[in-house]
Structures are given as structure tokens and as C-alpha cells.
Image (tube, rainbow, N blue to C red; front, side):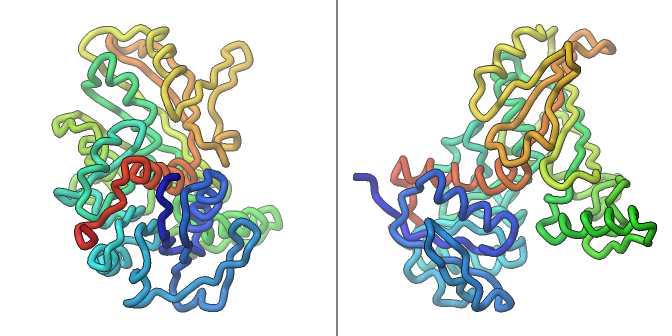
Length: 344
């Protein structure tokens, strides 16, 4: 009988936290006990797990005393403060924030790409950024056939990337505009309904926003290719859930479209979606709620003999966050590697 684990979800009441809860149930992760942790404003709330109401507990110093595994999705500041405490208490932390992604010695893991990296953890494993995860799942199978030399990616990012409150804000903005009222923007800097704008993360001196730099640096780390040439342009679009990406790839020599299609058709975590007669390709509406990254519209880049184009849509909350974290947890459980340095 497989070992069962005492699991805590940190940030349990957020969009990713509630998705983590659903996945632990539907994927039947080997649970011995479950603890739901959140801020003081969630005190007294309950969430349903396998038909039972589970109380949400306030995060405090003793929270990790009886926990083997923490699935954290409460933001970078919270993770920086509490993840080390969880590790010292004997837990392994799979962290969904940006806090540790580029920290030396902390594995940054997409299970379809670099599962072995998770096994080298020292108590913390980082979950990559949502757009990075979706792109990595689609590009890795091609990179194995012929190394990618350059990536040019443009993202079309939904409101879900900023959480449940952002999704609600877009709905309210749409209602306001349709009622000829002025839409209000609180979560985003500008109204997103019937609009789009550059990703709302800080810009560096080179004009790249934080989200774009995440895609560049994280992909290099996951692929183990520090010199991989990548450039990104990240845009918020008025879609509730699931991100999309237009990707241009450059190789050292021509890469046959049919070879790429064959590789992606059998790749884990990918579903090839192409009906050229109907002009039907991946859409965020159909990617929402799905585990797989939908990939399609593979074609030769007419401007470059060694270039390929592809388009993808993937659920940011699911594979772009919660599912990837649960898959990492499953990987650790299968290898009996849910062990923090403090517990060894």
C-alpha cells in the first residue's frame, strides 16, 4: 500500500488554492490528512473535500508541525516568510509563487520536461510561471528532436492570471460598459473588458516587464539551456480563464511541420487541435478546465527556412499552476521523496 501524506494547502481560499483542493480529490492523491491554511480574513470559512466540510485555519507558527507536504499559493512575500519555517518543521514545500524560482539549488520543475530535477530538492520546489509552464510543455518535445535556437513568443493572458477577484472585475466591467456606465479598474491598472494592454508587471531598464523576464529566465533554467535565445511580449486580453501564446521557433536546420505534428500528437500533457478546413485551432474557451495544453496551427515560417510557428491555449489556473504543483507532488510520492532536510 502506498504511503499516505499529511498535506497542507497554503492560500487555500484563492483561485489556485481551490483548484488544488479539487485536484487532490479527483486525482486521488494519497492523503493521510488535509489542512487548509489562509490569512486571518478567511478564519471561520470551510471548504468541501470529498463531501466533508474542512475548516480553513489561520496561518501561524505551529501550522506545519504535523505536515509532510505544503502546496503553497499565497504569493511571494508569504512564501519567503513561511516556506523556510515549513521546511524546518519537516515539510516539503511545492511553491507556486515567484519567490524561489530563480534561486540556486531550488528545482524549477515541469514534470513533462525535467521531472528528475524535483528529486534533488532541499525542501523547496518551485512551480514555474503559468506562461512558462504552458510553453515548456509544448516546446520540449520539439527541442528533443532538434535543439531550439531561438524563441519569439507573444502571450494573450486572461484575467485568471491575477486571481479570482480579477476575473470578477472583468465581468463587472463588461456589465458596466454594456449598460453605458464607466467601468472601474481596481485589480488591473486599466479596464480589461473589451480592451487589452501590456502585462501589468514592472518594467526593467530594457523595456521588458517582469512577466516577460520570467518566461525568458525560467525557460532557460527548466531546459538547462542558459544561452537559449528567447524574447517575449506579454499582453492582458479580455478572456476570463486560460492563456494563449503565439510562438515562433528557429532551428539550426529545417524542421518538417509533419515531424513536429507527430511529436506533439504523442507528447505528454499536449493535445493537438487542428482542423484546417474549419479554421479550428486552440481556443481559451475550450482549454478552460482541461489538463492538457492545446497546441495547433503548426506551420512553416515563410520568413525563415528553419522556422516554425505554433499556437497554444492552456488553463492558467489548472496546468499553469495547480495541476503542475500536484503533478510534482505525485512525482515525489511515487519516488518516496517527500522528505525535507529537517525530517531526514
